[in-house]
Image (cartoon, rainbow, N blue to C red; front, side, top):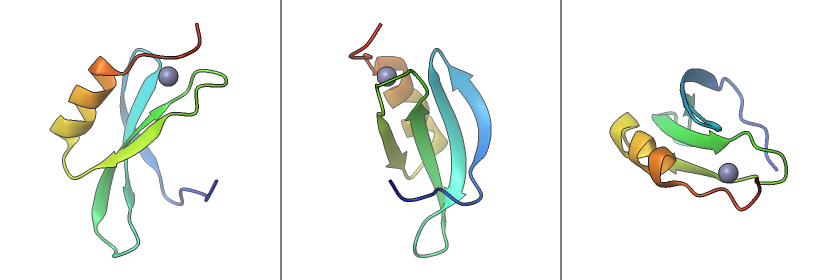
Length: 63
Ligand SMILES: [Zn+2]
């Protein structure tokens, strides 16, 4: 898994952290990352609103 350099966590919804980081083109990307053990779900979004929505609807495969 590639390192997310300069990941800044800005908020947390359940087990999911939302933060921003620079994508490969140097723009700010909004990432949602699940911190639950063995889940490993993460995704990038173009807006924080989209990342928040995805975090609320994320269903962990582990409990
Ligand atoms: Zn999860």
